[in-house]
Length: 189
Image (cartoon, rainbow, N blue to C red; front, side, top):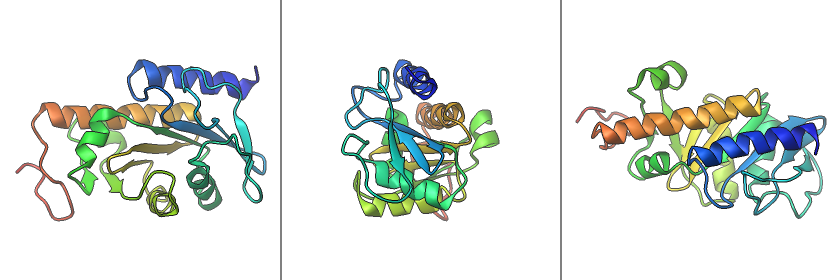
């Protein structure tokens, strides 16, 4: 098992243990020389196996995650070193009625004063473009009804941001703060 495979497995197990992913949903990647390593399509993140190398330019191996085009676009246009895509249920739920999430818990306020909500069908060019644009200025993006994309310097940092996003969304739901927080909306209505 390579060093990257061990890191992917460690982070994947934490994501699964926290309930941030289930079954074979989600994916992870890490930037490397001339491309990135990404989980295999259909991989269980708590036991993902060896990651697949995808070049920044050129053909993509069939076994690469179906979300490779989003990861590729982010690495082409930013300095992010790693991406975690998960399906945390509270973040997905709160994204259904919002254009953005404004955390009210102390950790959320400290690390993500605002989490934008993007649109686009999973695996689509539209979703890849929307998330890539938002990850230029934010480290966390929620795709409406789909899941989070968190980008950091390392896979561990991207995992922490994923956990943080879910925690902040769970706090809002438990506090009854489920009204729309779109642009110009009062978050305490």
